[in-house]
Image (cartoon, rainbow, N blue to C red; front, side):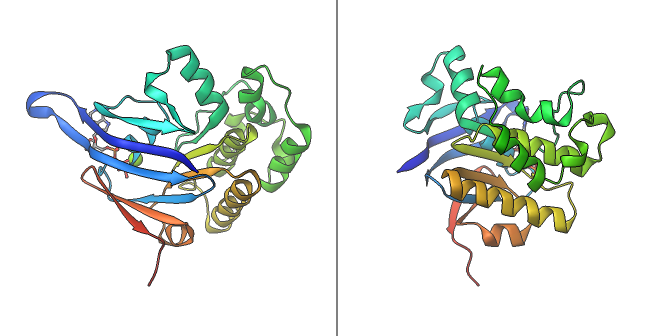
Length: 227
Ligand SMILES: Nc1ncnc2c1ncn2[C@@H]1O[C@H](COP(=O)(O)OP(=O)(O)OP(=O)(O)O)[C@@H](O)[C@H]1O
Ligand SMILES: [Mg+2]
């Protein structure tokens, strides 16, 4: 089953002489549970693509279906709830809430949805993300890599069907990077989560089920990595 379907997506920023065509007629689909790496040069349109798929930005034309739902046809309020329940975002900038502790930041999306946090899963995430000793700390008291791991925990806590990650390991050392990638893959396998991850790392791209290359707003499906 296709979890994500993108149809003829185009995005132009600005108008006239300063217009930038960030995406040009992009179409592809991703089956449930697949781990997709998105690669491409700086400025090629990768973040634009992920932001539109996550409904953080709107396309100039085209459609995005998540789990069969045409997300841009939904009413704003329904879309907000749908996004909270089905999509986990991991950005390069962490957007943690400075007044909340590590633990509170991670369970925040669950509380927003008036649900009860799964304590066992929270413990598992804190353990795998190596944040147990920092659970009562505030984001301002953490290193960049630790903050990034909190953001990853927060994205996984609701067990979203789709995880959108924009260079999620950009601030991590190689050991933490491989631990985080392993965590994401295991979570996606256990809960059949689909992952789209922008990365500049060749080794991460090589471990993906599929690689999409973005070049000047055009997306090419490179399939699985092979020598
Ligand atoms: N809000 C915006 N207004 C105008 N132009 C924008 C806006 N956001 C992005 N762009 C332009 O769209 C193009 C694609 O940007 P995007 O952020 O998607 O690139 P990227 O592939 O994620 O690059 P990087 O690897 O550097 O993060 C760039 O030329 C950029 O200047
Ligand atoms: Mg980007």
